[in-house]
Image (cartoon, rainbow, N blue to C red):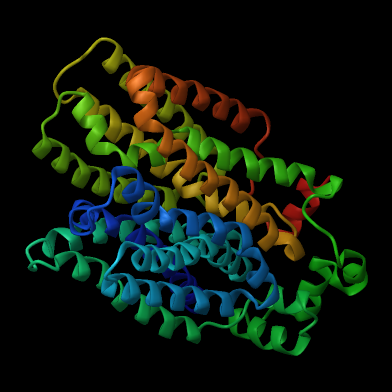
Length: 438
């Protein structure tokens, strides 16, 4: 188990780079616009958003190298992309070069949401799989917090402080790229490529008592692997897991989580808070996110995925309903930050802890990377579209109506959890394949 934990933590460190890379740009935001004299539209859509569009592309196509090259080699390439992105963007002297290197980092983020959870889910024992896969989400949250802290500590590093803020990520990226060489390849991926001897060697490291024949039998590769060649996730028999991945990704973003994280200061300003209170609130958000993500990691294999989604859904409905009410009735003071802290806690213990675990479990072995690419790209396309609409929606229908829409969507999520979502706790990936595809 110690080896599996070490390998899982190593792979999940891709999430740390994901979180760090996503937030670190916030420290350079205004400085870059002043430096390059760019318009609001160009600055927002090219300089700031290019990493996000890289993430969408990485998520859509990340299943291809994860399937073809293997989980381990893809994770190595992800580390290289982050490293090149950090160095290149920190040395850039014009907005187009900067945007190009940020795009490369985005590719790494998108691909990591496929390769890392797939790898961990395939090496983890059924009883610990949720906890180990959710280490990826924990690392994302930790990376976000460390980026905020790093930006704060480097804020007075001179005229080129923004270069240090962005370039500092080269250090964790280099460390990750080196350590990921030490993990073995996924035995399930090796078996899917008929590399029996290599799979046997890895399986013996994971569990000396395990027999390769048993895993082969569970995977049904002994007799029908040829029949599965050329299959895609869009076949009729895979419609249910495809729908599950699509809906959990849609509801994740229609909670408003990314819209809130990107526009927290604007939301707090709408609620009548000053700039210093907004900055303090962002630190509180990071800490709340980290604490409740930890709760989610510890509880996911104890209570199960559905119970955490119940808790998160009800918390969403209450917190978003209260935020909407606060804007409708113009409540002043600290009510809105408190309600939004409840919202962050609900997300962290529910959707935040569950989404990457659940999507990594519901597809059969030979289609896992493709299925995750579908779920991940649905998530990231919406993560690009919904936040971009927030300024327009706030100025037209108002913040109260926006948060009410998010609250109503979370009522639909609760129905999804009650009536559609299967429990995946404690079952092997092969057992899940049998039950979900019935």
